[in-house]
Length: 106
Image (cartoon, rainbow, N blue to C red; front, top):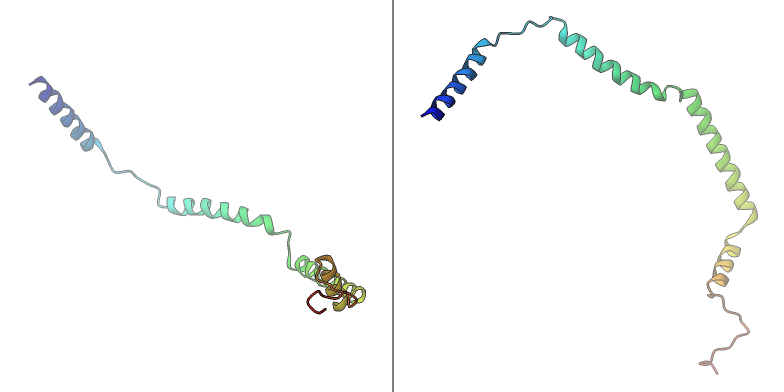
């Protein structure tokens, strides 16, 4: 029986604690202050890319295009398609000489 009384005492103390709760008075601008703090953090994260301005982006794009044009013209001047195919065939053993005769032809 003492166990039941102890349980009942615990239940009663829990209900008394619930009755002791009161409403919390919050500042009417609490939400605004909280939202300002949250948005201030997002603005700080965006500041890391501020150095990459549109002028710098345009200059970078122009440099990349110029380098590509120079590289393309150098490649066109130094090599041709036939030379590349012949070199590829020789390196992989696909190139055959006209002087060689096949066993099947004789």
